[in-house]
Image (cartoon, rainbow, N blue to C red):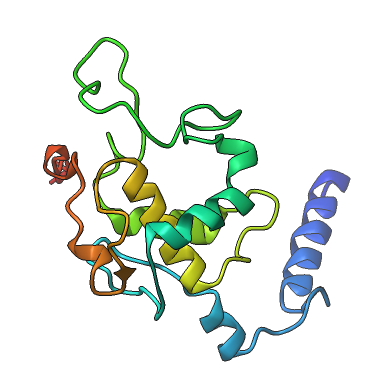
Length: 174
């Protein structure tokens, strides 16, 4: 003797299970090539960096065209996140976390800009533009010289000012 409530449960349970075997007909299959195009992970050691190159001299123009409106003329005076300054402030009562004062790897700057910038049109910069604007950001943070070329070999070799102040704080649970 089944109650109506139990019968409703059986209808819902078995009905949903039957639907789970069928596709809802949304979207379309992704090809391996399309999926590989989205695999743009760059690791701290530079693994995953693409071909290309650029210097801060070239990056100044990329910055002017794509970054200036949000981050300001100097990287400190924009309406969005501050990109430069803050050196020596991390141990103070008011730390200023910028690319030059906080970020441990130059490759992370490249990776972040590649994925998320420019804000309205992420993913639109060429590899050369990405290397150039990364070089410019490193230059305005006094990390590299203006003429220094950044590429897949030189970018991972950049030693960021705060690189050695990050510690692994993972405690495995047994």
